Amino acid sequence: MQIQQNFSLKNHNTFGIDVKAKEFVAVHAVEELKSILARNVGKPMLVIGGGSNMLLTKDVDALVIHIDLKGIEKIHEDDDQVWLKVQGGEKWHDFVMYCIAHDYGGIENMSLIPGNVGTSPIQNIGAYGREIKDTFVSCEALHIETLEIHQFTLEDCEFGYRESVFKNKFKGQYIITSVVFKLTKRNHNINIEYGDIKAELAQNGVETPTIKDVSNAVIAIRQSKLPDPKELGNSGSFFKNPVIPKAQFDAVHAKFPDMKFFPVSDDEVKVPAGWLIEQAGFKGKRFGNAGMHKNQALVLVNYGGATGHELLEVSRMVQKEVFEKFGIAIEAEVNII
Image 1 (cartoon, rainbow, N blue to C red):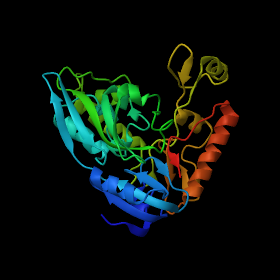
Image 2: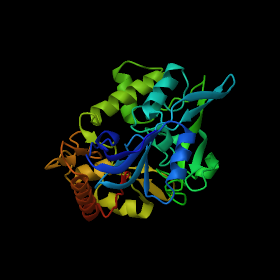
Image 3: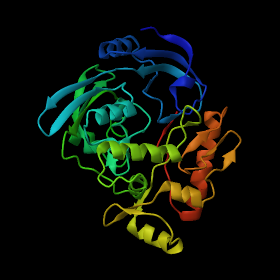
């Protein structure tokens, strides 16, 4: 475990931004993490996992700690369920594929989401009708100052749409080291409510889908819409889908009757940010080396050589135009650093 100086983060963020960390270290065990934190008290730090949920806009004048904890452990099992404890450095999609291979159901709709398991609870990741909270049991997190491990239950995490206590009242205080998931072994609750999944399954002639069928459908959909970060720098969906009061939605919907929407409750409606961005004219629009993807307006991309600041300026331009056209504010889903 060696701290490296003036370390390039290009291979540690999915936008492929070539900024440098003043110091960098990868940790492979909780005790290593505790040791690093204890030896660097008071020093500015940035903790990263898969680097898929951040936009680096400048060099990082701090110690960057890369969480590389590995392992999947079965901690409980009965005829219907299995509980898996997954270390924070495991890649999310690899974990999904592990579950598919063992016929463990519950997270198949979240196939191909970039990032690591340890960061997945922070923003309650989700896709196609499923979120982390649906299978989450608990997580262990190391308090950065006290170096004590705390366990957070489902209730403790206060999950919301792309929200948790780790993004709010405990932001910057904990490092999630492992997560426990509760998955089904039989009688899987197959969710194919999204039209894209239904269409993909129908195209493949699948009438009674398995969790593998759903996973394959989601992978095909995502690959058709979303660029591979290894080929075109991006962080997946850059913006959150805004949830607005029904009264506001009714007023906007009257002006734009083709607007897509999903009722959240009697009082709130979710509007797809991708639809708003596309209607504002940004789908496939490029500004130098930065722009919005041609197949999915929700994805901000680095065409090669863009700086984080250039990407940030494009995102702000999109936010401004969407607000001026629809009166709806869209927020970045990624962390701006």
